[in-house]
Amino acid sequence: MITILTQPRLMVDARAYLAEGPVWDAGSSRLLWVDIMTGRIHSTNPETGATSTRVLPLPVGCIAPRSRGGLVAATADGLWAIPENGEPVRLIEVESERSDTRFNDGRCDAAGRLWAGTMAYDLQPGAGSLYRLDTDLGVERVIAGVTVSNGIDWSLDGRTMYYIDSATQRIDRCDFDPASGRILDRRPFVVIDASDGSPDGLAVDGDDGVWVALWGGWAVRRYTPDGRLDAVINVPAAKVTSLAFGGPDLQDLFITTARRPEGPDDDLRQPHAGGVFQARVSVAGRLPVAFRG
Figure (tube, rainbow, N blue to C red):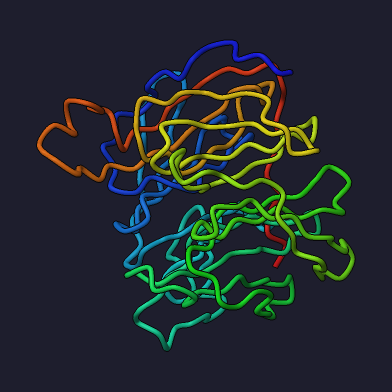
């Protein structure tokens, strides 16, 4: 069983509508994260909370480092290259003909392919898909009929892919072929009771533990590889969206949240909703893989 070394502290009082997609940048020792609907890509110094921002003209669902430098971003109409200096360039159009959907969460596999999924703005059931964006800039729809495509990551040996469609209330697992990027036998790994929130962002740590953010659940959970609940971190915001490991030893857990007031007392109950939080845990995570397109 892992140990929670420190409870979450507020790192950035961002009051973001939908903070998401945290990614650790080891080169700059900063946390990258997005505020989806405003198209903002943020870069935060964990020691000071100082944050710089770039703004895209489209909602940004997720970001990933790029092997050529800079970032890639999955937006409302496809995949964009975000150079360190210079203007963003669209690499691939995906669902650009649709005005009702946008990209949401995503992550690169060990081969540098970006997996990212779409969802409808109005949460229409089955309107989204999970895509694999290959290093040759080819695009393949891998799973159709998705409602809220969310967290995705892989086991240490690369043979299991974990995936969340939040509407199912499950973390699923699939057999994964690292060479081809093919998946087989999608099946439930963990079912989350609706009273505990909905599964959102996901990350696998260096001991093969599966961490999940709970939207509406005020918490992050860790499950062992056989699906047993191992740890719970309570977060002082209801809508916990995602998480990422970082810091010098990759034992800092960065947690993003959303600010969606649902009543006059909501600000009193969770004044720092929409903030980014930082906790310490006894297990290390893994560095993100860069997109190799």
